[in-house]
Length: 327
Image 1: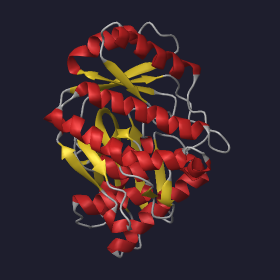
Image 2 (image 1 turned 60 degrees about the horizontal axis):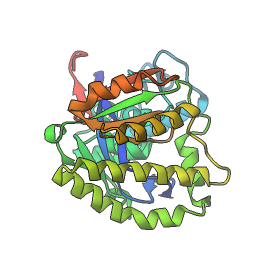
Image 3 (image 1 turned 30 degrees about the vertical axis):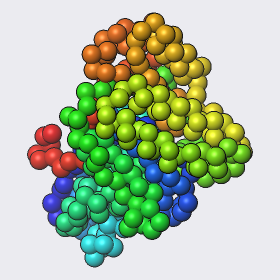
């Protein structure tokens, strides 16, 4: 059977989801708004081969833990069942950014795997169907299927929970600079963290407040109101991490370097540089600025100790098929 290669971006959520109302279906407790990232991608090739006795995975040239292999095989099982296929697959995947540090590697990974495997299995799925299928592998992966700025609706059933594009990548010239402050995988995965969310005394209040923030961020996007957009995104990140830190047991994804960047951003803004931060489930900090502020933000970041590297991202297209290994 033919080998198929797909490339998918990681994404950064401005209105985030933390907690699920259905673990098996990966239905989120709330809707979310995100942007695909041009500089953080996963490229995955899938080939179903009758000669294989089991699924074989080669991810960044490293061996996978049993749990990770099982999770990937179960996702392939969904695709095999849909296609009526009983053949194992060889999967080769590579990331151009570190895994498990708050840059949504599972989002780009499962989006690329879903795109490549579905086509390799002979399925002709719509964007909506691919988004739903990617979500079953990793919730946030559904947001990496459509283009640009994306909304993921929580839905009440599996077929209602999918992501779609609000605006194309070229709609707004903003930038996301990721300050990578550590390259070791986090001790507690996002999947484990989601399961703890409801143990926080602040969880219910967070969920109640999400619809208002969704409306605010969508209006800021429509109006290209960068100040409002940044303020809502920043408050939302702090809110989510407050829930994490007050879960039982508590989750501390921030490192001392994370805190240093946060405090620095506030100082830069006071001095006239309009930049805002957001943070996913990890120590890395995403700095959001207008494209004409990139050089200033990079220069400011160079003065902070402990930053391993800076990844510059613009709004990006969603998952795509590659031909002959080319973008």
